[in-house]
Length: 565
Image (tube, rainbow, N blue to C red):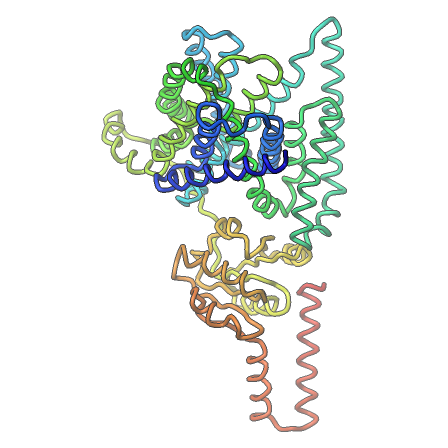
C-alpha cells in the first residue's frame, strides 16, 4: 500500500516536473502545469490516482490549509486603510458587478440558481499567487496600480472569508435554525476573541523566544496553524476558517515576512498535489458539458472583467494608465474560487460540471493573463491613442516607491553595531537586517530602521530594494549565506559596493567570484591594528593604559547603544 502510494507520487511529480519545464519555457505560471499534470494523471489519460483518492485528498486539504493560513497571514487591514477607501469601495463594486454579470451568463446557459451563484462568486476572485509573483518580477508591487491591485486582492480575500463563514452556517435547517445560527456566531466571536487575546498578549512573548531559532520558528508556525485550525474545527467551524484565523493571529507579528517566506515552499508542495487532485477529478463527460460555458466565462473574465475594473477605478479618480494596468492584472481566476467550489461540493450544493467549468476557465485565463500582465505597458501604449480620443486624462497619482537606503548592514552583532555608529555619525541613511529578535527590538527602540529576516532567504532578499543601495555590508559569519546575498544583489544590479566578512580564507575566492568588492577578515585586520600599534606607539604603561581606556569606552558604548542595553 505505502510502496504503491510512493510510486504514484513519484510518477505524479515526474509528470509535473516535465510539464512545468515546458510551461517555464513558455513563460507560464506553474499552476497551469499542475492542473495539466492532474488531467494527465487522472481518469482521462493515465489514471494514476485510482484507489487512493482519500490519501491524495488529505494532501490536497493540507495545501488548502497552508494556502489559507498564508492568506490570513497577509490580511493586513492597515494596508487597505493606507491605500484608501477607494480600494475597499472599488473591490466591493468589482465583486458585485462581476458576480452579477457572471450569474446572468450562467442562468442564460440554463444552469441552476445555486450553480450560477457559486460559479459567479468563484470567477470574481483574482489569483494572489500569480499576481504577486508577476508584479514582483516586474518590480511593480509598490507602483500606484500595484498597490491598488494588492489592496483589491486583500478586499477579495475578506469577501471570500465572509463567504466561507456563510457557507459554514448555510446548511442549518429546521425550526431551531435561528438558535443554531446565534450559537454558531457566538462561538465564532468567542473563538476570535480568544485568538485575539493570545495574539495580543501571549504570542509576542512566545515568538520572541521562538524566533531565535529559524528551525523552531518554522515548526512552531506549522504547529500553530494546524493547532488553531483543529480547535476551530472541533468548535463546529470548518478547517479552512481555522487556517485563516491562525494566519490572522500571526499577521501583526514583526516576524510575519520571515514566517511567510518559510511556509511558502511547503505550501507550494501541497498546492501542487491540490491542483493535481483537482485535474484528476475531471471526467470526460464533465469536460464536454463544460467547454462552451468555460469559453464564454473565460472571455468575460479576460475582457469584460478588466473593463469593469477599469471603469470602477476611473470613478475612484485613478489615472487611465493605472486603471488599465490594474484591470489587465486582475483578469484571471483565483485558487480561492476552487476552494469555494470544493466547499460547495462538500456541502452537497454542487454535483454537476461546475468544477470542470472553473478548471477550464482557470487554464484559459491564467495562460493568457500571464502574458498580458508581463506586457501590460506595451499593451497600454498600443491602446493609448484610442483612449486619447476620449479626451485628456485629468487624474494624477503619486507613485509610492519602496523605502530606499544608501547603506544596508546585514548582522548587527559584533562588527555591525560599530558600523552603525559610524554611519549615524556621518548622517548617512542606513538600515539593518538581522535574524536576532532582540537586536531588532533594540534597533527599533533607538529609531534605526531594522528588518527581521534571514540573509539566506531569497524571497526575503528580493523584497528589499538592495539594488538601489550604494553600499552593502555583511558582517554575518556564514559564507554560504553571504554567497546567497551577493548573488541576489548581483542578479539585479552591479552598482552597489559589497563588503563581505570571513573568519577564515577557505571561501575567500568564492565570495569574490560571486561579486564581493572586498572581504573583511577580522584576524587579519586585528593583526594589522596591533602591528601598527607596535610600530608607531611607544611600549610604555601609558600607551597600554590609553588603549585599555579606549577599549572600555567602546564596550560601554556598545552596552549603551548596542545589543546589550
